[in-house]
Image (cartoon, rainbow, N blue to C red; front, side, top):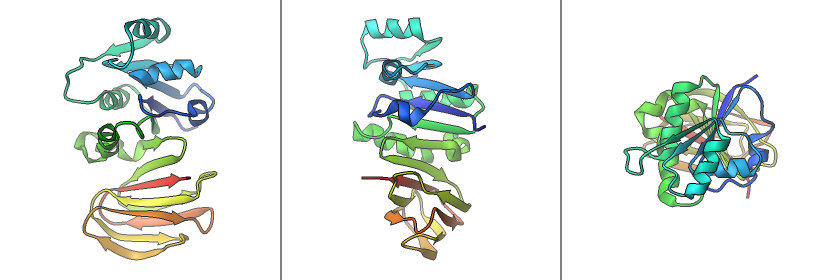
Length: 216
């Protein structure tokens, strides 16, 4: 069974229970700042809480310390975001197949861009293909050069291919708008494609690709 770590930050986190699913032994839950409060309020057990906790009260922080086995307090002034600190904690302490990150979209645009641009940081590159960023309407996954087959998610009509960097020889098969080996010399968002079947095959030779399945 696939093992996973789930990092829940303080952004929009509707449908937490549905996104996380039934908790199981090979699943680790990390709450980031106010995300830890939202997890507990949703009745979800938390393994670790991490952050500077500037978005919650002292009483809420004390409650976290009583209910969560490990609480890591960070200084407010630091060289990385709380979410980055959580990702580093997961990479150092857990050996998992998938890292799901919730609460990274919506809210402050600068925070959202910082989260999506984790892909550009060399220290996170070894984790890149393990990371999924989710909310109630979107699933974002990163891909390095290669050939892939991606399955359609339930109730997700659209699939978008986002070149985070220049992309070479991009091919899309079984998509409404196919590509035969196109090159893009700049980052580009190829949005609102659709599945013709239950899967789409795609491949590319150079670059970093983000693939987003979404619904309105």
